[in-house]
Image 1 (cartoon, one colour):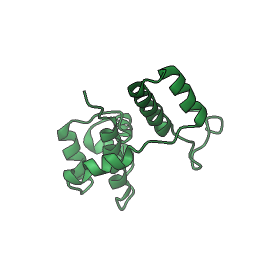
Image 2 (cartoon, one colour):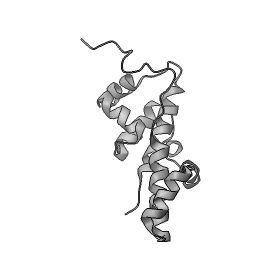
Image 3 (cartoon, helix red, strand yellow):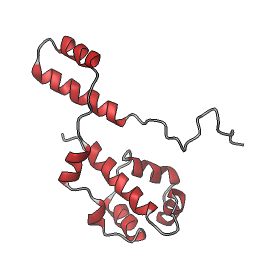
Image 4 (tube, one colour):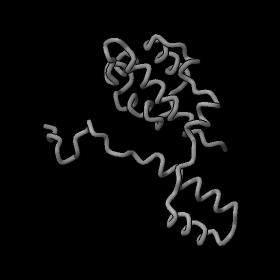
Length: 137
């Protein structure tokens, strides 16, 4: 079975970009409310973790003033986003030792490690750390 994670991540990225291009800076919550879904669902759709059904994608495109075909990533866009991340020499050595010369296993493990490395979110400067946030009441 094909791995569609990259497809949904790129679709979510394009939805987020289209939403942020709205003149009034449409929030995830406001868009979710108009769609009749939770804000958490909208967050997960934009992150590629939730796979929205076609009718919902159609509604999203309509509310964002976009054509649905412009939100769906092309093969070229998917290939550009799935570039392999350079792994550290020690990680490569561990993979090679574990694979015991099996080139198919090395390729599989380096691909997995690269994908995992690429998806780890680095802290953004505009976000407060967990300790800096006010507790919810």
